[in-house]
Length: 178
Image (cartoon, rainbow, N blue to C red; front, side, top):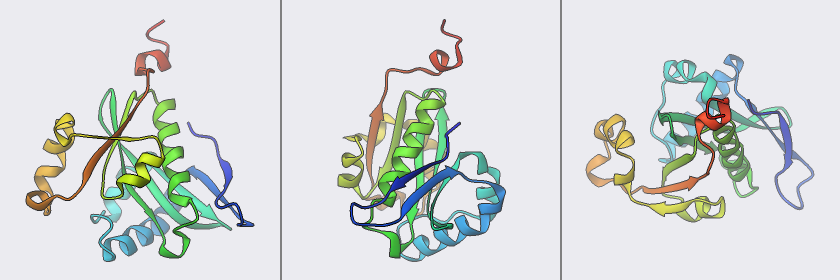
């Protein structure tokens, strides 16, 4: 499980991002961030019910006690997890909040023992700065068959697949491989 941590968000910023796993008390705040980013065309919609059902996989970024950014992990298989629903409120963009969220999600994925973390994104250079590399969509048939086939943008998808890989396997983390 990820520990709570504070991370400075910008060299000249007096405040810090407080990262933590989301709780049920965060559902309204997560919904607000999702809805605002859906309206801007940055995210696909997520229902309140979907957020509640996947609560154990969400992380929130707080600044001065306010949820300003979110992200979640979605298991696609025992060795594969997706970073999804990454979003930051507009007034907190350009301060490094998104990078803090991605690094926390990647750290959480590693702690859970996933050797491969991927995302579908339009913000390729952002993910490259976080250590991801561009790859092919076809590498993730789990994603294609689970989500892409239902996506209204499927025929005109403009997202690029990015991935980061680690040597750790789930059995190595759980102790099963020893």
